[in-house]
Length: 301
Image (cartoon, rainbow, N blue to C red; front, side, top):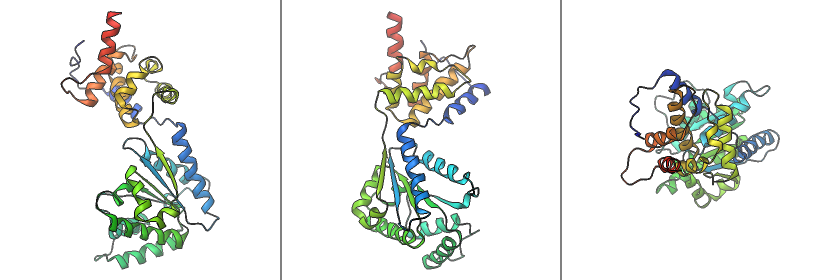
C-alpha cells in the first residue's frame, strides 16, 4: 500500500469529522474522580473557613486544561452561578512571578486595564479590593508548572506565598494544573503545599480494559463515520502509536477518520490508521509503523 497516495486538500466533510473527533470528551474514571474532587472542594469551602486547594499533575496532552474547563462550565451553569466571574481562571506562562500573577489576577477580576505604572503594591491593592467585592468561588490556575520549573525556587516561593495570603484572607480555593514538575512545590514551599494538600495525577493509559473503554467512548460518540474498528484487535497498535496519551490518541483518530470520510461508506480501516500514523508522527527512517506491520500480517494471512 502506498501511504502517500492521498494528495489533499481534504474535503469539508472530512474536516468536519476530524474536528468532531477532537471535540470528543470521554469522561473516564480518573478524569471524573478529579473533577468531582474539585467540585466537592469548592462546594465545601463555601461554608468552611479552611483554606485549601488541589494540585493536578499530568503529562502534556492528558487533559488537565480540559478538566479545568469542565469545572468552570459546571459551576457557571449551576443554579445561581450563571456569571463567569464567579470563578477566576488564569493561565500562567514561563515568565510568571508575583508581579505578573498580580497583573493577571487584576484583569481576571474584571478591571478593564492595568494602571499606567503597575507597581506590585498597587496591583495587590486592586486584587484585594476585587476579591473582597466578588468573593469568587475559586481560582483555577492552568500551566502552573511554570511557577517552579527550572532554577526558580526563590520566585516559586514568592508566588506561592502570594497565593497563600489570598487563600487565607478570602477563603479562596486554588486549583492548579500542570506537569509533574509541580511535585517540587512540596519542597519549595511546604506552607503552600499544606494548604493545597490534595494532589491528583493523570497518567497515560496502560493497555487494558480502561483503554478499551476509552476507545469505545470515541466509537460511540462519533456518528459521522464508522469507528467500530477500535473495539477490536487494533486497540493494541493504537495504544503503541499513542503511548496511551489522550492528545496523541485524538490526533490519530482524527486523521484516520478524515481518510474514512473521503470514501463512500465512511468506515475506518487499518490502512487509514497507517496513514494517520505518518501524518501525526512524520517520517523517520527505520521507525516501525504499527499499523503497516498489521496490514502486512493480514495480507499474508
